[in-house]
Image 1 (cartoon, one colour):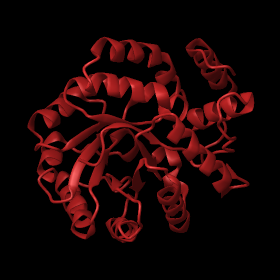
Image 2 (cartoon, rainbow, N blue to C red):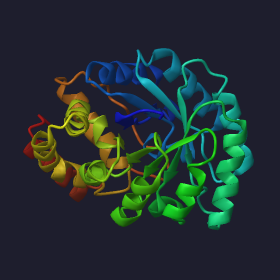
Image 3 (cartoon, helix red, strand yellow):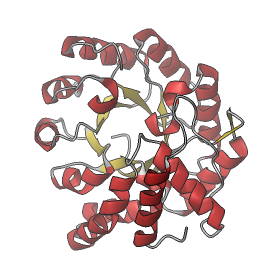
Image 4 (cartoon, rainbow, N blue to C red):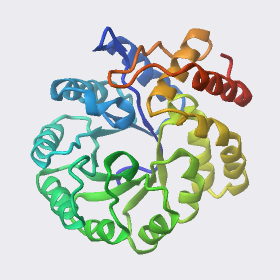
Length: 299
């Protein structure tokens, strides 16, 4: 199993369109202090689709060196199997990288057989556990339960981040996956339901803002404190929903910057999003601020 508990799909701080490593180091310190179990770097929330390969490598290397005991999952996926294989091979040579996150190829819209071939090719070169990432809303293709379960038998494929939103599909995976295969929520609003059918954790967007609360939710459930987990799930409901009021990561990076501006949370300003994403629109910003204040955050 790659990890259980609360992983953050960490944002990438940008300043003048370059990675702000000073701010990124402060982000890692913030998560170490707030009980985040795993740092997932260069995922969708980290704007991986607009990072160069060199930027990805620098972020992964920096994370591996500065994560302070947290599990490090390196996002190496792309729409090209060749590119994914090469980046996976490189990441496996980085000391401190514990697992790899590999998204289903986007834009290409491969068949289920193509998905099997893609992930099998990456697994063949990997010396780290692989977490597959199924997010059809971003990629245009859904990896079915049958395909996931077929790939779960492949050496080095150790889990799936499920963001299909289909609890029937996720339940089927949990019911039939081999022992030790990790099913991780890729949808903050569905984390508790996914845990209830056999999931073991989350790779969270909202954890960029309230990591300690996400950690408490997951660990409360895994440790049998079901009422506590349910209460936290309800507390987070509106905040989770508002993190997707516009395309991720625009709302969450805005939220982090609002908390940074308050000076009360130990968060750095993480700058802008990279084109073609743009800053949060006024109506969406008003909704975000209202949800954060309702949750008790000072912005």
